[in-house]
Image (cartoon, rainbow, N blue to C red; front, top):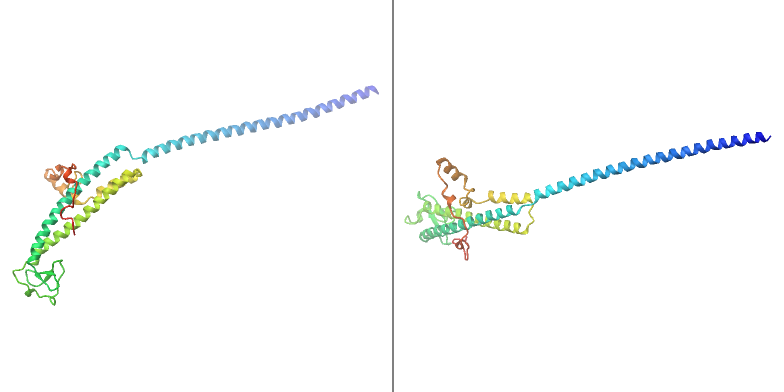
Length: 265
């Protein structure tokens, strides 16, 4: 009886050991699985952080390169200011020449207008050399109902003598307007430079616009901007452009303290 009880207790212990060993095994397996998952997640996190760091470094480098491309250097700005001064000096010189030319052509027109036939409404008129037409001082044709050509004395100035001076006046006025507009563009360009808000793209666009939009009277005075036709003739003949040697330094007499001659409509 006692021996049977001993065998039974021993069997219970073995059963309990087997059960315990199975439970511990499962716990150990679960722990090992959890450790592997943790290590895997750790490696994934490290990989993500490494890639993010590399991307940040690449972006920083890209931003630095972009900034280097977008920023206008002090040397470039200084060169552009020299260009602006050169263009401005050429514009002032062109305006002075234009003003003197306008004074002369107005004098010639005034002299002819003083001798022209005067209509009752105050208009000065000129008949053509062939005696068939009449034009007023502004170039408008005058109808025969207003005045017939034969009513104008042959000693009066003729239309063919007056018209070239009128055309020259209109050309000079148009040139003057272009020069004044260009001078305003130069002032605006200086304001943009002083503001310091130009991107590199805007800087080069502004620089090129001022070169392309320079009036012919300015181009003729700036080396490198001379009128193409004149430059072509000089290259073909092997000679030098006489305007290329013109002194464009800004002297006190180029800074106007009064109205530019002829600067009126």
